Image (cartoon, one colour):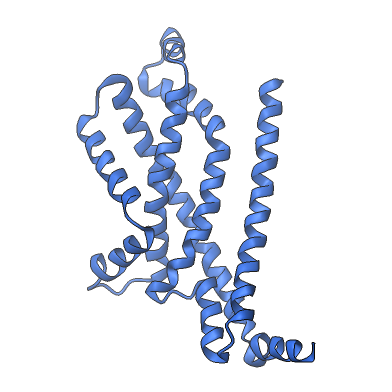
Length: 230
């Protein structure tokens, strides 16, 4: 037991090595927060384009571009996308690595959000468009004021789960030398030559956050079910 506490002290307390984890966690949360915002905005935009084309046949060029975006992003690993954005697209530019992380993970998440939202829009009965027309609303206003709010409510749990997936995906940010939570644990490991404690600590931090978010998603789903019955 004494050896364990000694290792614990050497791993986290000496030279304030625990700060690698707290600073890394801060970076991870910043990337996740802004990537979620970017992914939601991009995803809703693409979803509306795709749904509009499916329902009306319009926006053919934008729909083609959207389908290419979805195919490329969903068909390649997020780590490869991160490396391409940092080492290829911004190779000749000095750019903040956190921004690159936000951009890469936001663009990746947007592709999955788009399909989630599109499925929600397509699940809304076509009669809702007719109801909007009877109220004197054009297609755009019907989509904004009637269709999207209903679709958003239907897919909200799935969107929340996508946020959880995004949080875990940010663990590969260290491949561009970004000091996120996982990289913080790796730095401690490289200094102490002790792998077990820092990696377990990183895993536990992720686990606590994910369990907390999953609990919130569960409560959200139950509340939505109650409102539907009401």
